[in-house]
Each structure stands twice: as structure tokens, then as C-alpha cells.
Image (cartoon, rainbow, N blue to C red):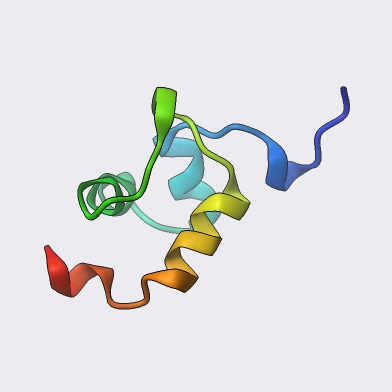
Amino acid sequence: MNASTEEQLLSVKELAWKLNRHPNYVYLMRKAGFPMPGNRTTLDEALAWLAKHPNWRRSL
């Protein structure tokens, strides 16, 4: 199976690196409702969630 970069399952640290953010940013995303089953997600899922929730930090 040859997955593209966007389809790879990423850990919190890997996702933070791809988003050019600190890992705490991803932990706060999870606290705000971003699902990461098995502590893994894809970059596409993260970007889609961020696009759907542009003001997510205000709700914390």
C-alpha cells in the first residue's frame, strides 16, 4: 500500500510539525473536540476540522 503524505496516520508531534505548530496546539484541538482515535490522525482530517471550526480556541 502506497499512501500519500496526507493519508499517513500521524501522532500529535508529527501533526504539530506538519501544521508548523507546537504539540500543545494539537492537544488543545483535541480538548476542543478534534477526534484522534488511537492518538493518530491524518493531515487532511486535521485541516478539514480546522476549516470547519475556525474559532475553536474561543470555546476553550
